[in-house]
Image (cartoon, rainbow, N blue to C red; front, side, top):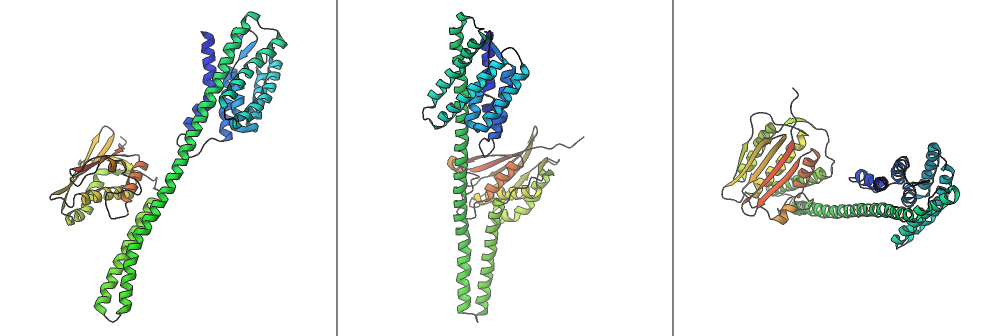
Length: 419
């Protein structure tokens, strides 16, 4: 039983590069580097040698050959040579009667690992390479130890030859298979993200051209009319006013696109969300009245403190309220309610409307850079808002029923005042 525990520990050390890869590269848009392979393999090798187990009298079992093979495959020959030097130095430090035999074995094994690593990278049948490598890395140390030290009990050789070979094969197979799968998944994710980025850019470019072309076409048409009748001053004045309005609309469109491309600020300060909502209510009240929509606020009288960027939180609230008002502007009794409450350490803002609502498919696409339920506008307001809320540490949830209404629930971690 103790042998099984020791071998299990060695297999755990073998998986250190895989575990560290999933931790370190989980949120990064790149795959592993040779330096990462070297560092994790070095740690794995040192731990394996420090906690090596004696499978047979005269034979120390650890996963040094597994790590050496892994380092050569994924880190290259330079990484492999550094691991070899590390092993030699640490083995000399540990000392013992069998240190010179151990050094001879690792040098021979390293030479064979170079061959196996090259075959592994080019072979289609990687499982067979793993099997052969596992057998060789198990048989070679036992054979050389027996020849040079004569320290085995003959009756133990068949049993330990089988068990150690199995553990070496399992160790190589586990590490190589899991790590290669993790790398493959990461590279697939990066490719998908890059394709998504290209698709997004193409949609934004097409949308920008479409949105800007409309007012420019109008300006072009009215300038032609002015050219044809320059003496008709009332008409010219009317046309110039329309042209100026279209130019302002173009500026607003470009501002929307710049807001989504500009990096969001990470300069956050403590603000009173309750006071912010009251201020935004006063700002948006005329817009709601113009669309025959009632705008109601329910907020605590006491401060509700969060960490956020004041300008960005205002823009976020304006975007959500504007969308809510427009969604119920055609209702007989349109109403938008802002409800702010606190639950434990969270500030929760609900923005409810009784407008047209959304389907499940539409809700799943909210926040996408080219999706909107409206036929007009740049369709970037909610995209900006979702990103800003995420940067400020908040979350957004949505619940909607077609022809009934929509509720956006925005939550932020509260920032309590110091006593």
